[in-house]
Structure formats: C-alpha cells, structure tokens
Length: 115
Image (tube, rainbow, N blue to C red; front, side, top):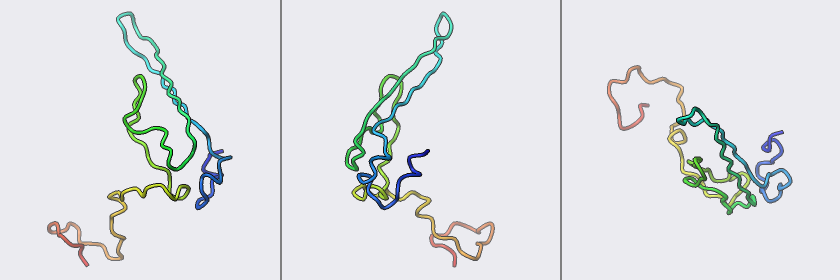
C-alpha cells in the first residue's frame, strides 16, 4: 500500500497520523576503484520526523558521507494548510490552450499572444 492511498485531501495530516511514517532511511551502495581493485562501499542516511507541518526534518544541502540532499519540497497544502504556497513554475504560468492554432511558423516573436 502507498501512504497516499490512505490519506484524505483536505483533512489535516495531524488528523491522519496513523497513516504517516515517522522517519525515512536511504541506503546507497557503490563500487570504488582502488589500487588493489574495486571495493564496495555503503552509506546509510536515516532521519526521523514528527509530521508537523512546521517541522522540516531535512533541507537541501544537508547530507552525510558522500550523500547530499539536493532539494526538498514543502508539505502539500492539501494536508498542511499552514504550509507556504510554492512559487508558480513556468508550466503553471502557461496560458490556457485556445481553440485556434497559431500560424506555423510564426513570422517573429510577439510581446502579446495572438488572438
């Protein structure tokens, strides 16, 4: 079962704690070349969290050993109304499709959409 199949959008995460895990673990293994051949190395990163909307357990740039967290996303507002609203992405800013296609190719870029 996926955690998300049990969660109900619009209901605070704090009211659905029985469905939420309290931690995560990542184990990575790799091979490192040495003068004597290859050696298998292992690195395990484990953290726990409270599931509180304002409790951020790990952030981008943190890490241990040769693992680094490159980014983290805030909780979904569906479950944490106090979570910050993420900035729109370019895909979010794209205008809605129209019924009429634009000429192909356009003669030159325009500063306004064509009607």
